[in-house]
Length: 189
Image 1 (spheres, helix red, strand yellow):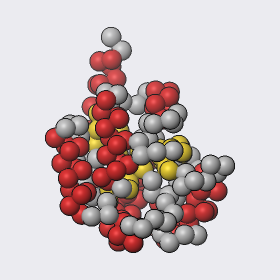
Image 2: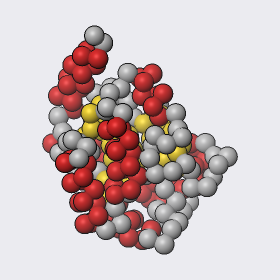
Image 3: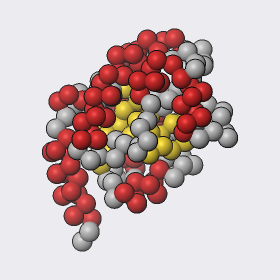
Image 4: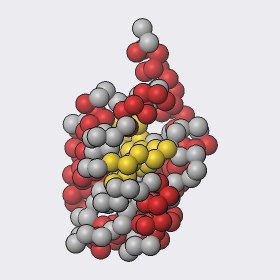
């Protein structure tokens, strides 16, 4: 499960819009993360560094928790056993060790969520699709500044990237795990 850019300083002109649309997804992501952890699905935070180039996970969480969206960040902060990848640009794959980490973990199926749905989540989904990953992007676990932009992003993910956009509470994680295991066995031959 990739949780994208939720550790966010919300320090940009459109931040009030994104904070407003992001508030409803926090509980959805928390619930999905809890279910994923119970199913032994690895949790990987993929996060912008917001210009904090000398930062690590803890320093970035502390910095963003003290900013405008601090409550959102606190609700979604990573656990000690979660992975954390810092990214310099929109895609979680661009100039990051994400591909290597996913390969080491033997992961070929991704559940993507976070902000902004029409930028960083979409760009990460696109790069994942080009790398052959099976994609799930629960429609209630990503937000964009403008609702219609988010809806268009999900339409693109569904139609162009073959992503399953089933809402998080309807996702059957056991079925996803079983499909992932079958896909893994296919690639072994």
